[in-house]
Length: 152
Image (tube, rainbow, N blue to C red; front, side, top):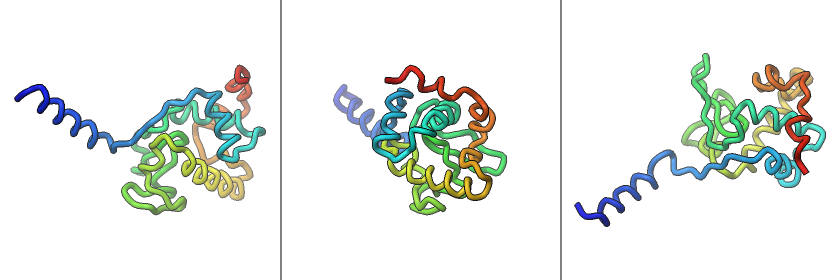
């Protein structure tokens, strides 16, 4: 097999592997700015969100969590569960989204879903961040401002 044929086969494999999703690992300051300016997150809560994202996905939009005890998986930057909120391979779930869309570099749809989760959890518990175990374990009652203190 010649070099051109090998290259073509490699290109096809790359294009059709790993869900063919474009991913991004955010800088915390850039993410905080984008979330406030483009996706309607409040400045008041942004440090909590950045802390949550740090511990849920380490700022990686393509993150897929380990299999949960209830056989669900968590997806994307915010680690949104496929138990209720998304369905793999179809636009469905409480957020009306394909889980694959939560693992790409466009966080607009993730932001809409995560604000819905936050709002519904806040109605139920009084604190929207209660929906995320990582926030409760790593961010609640902590100095979350330290996650954005160096941002300009």
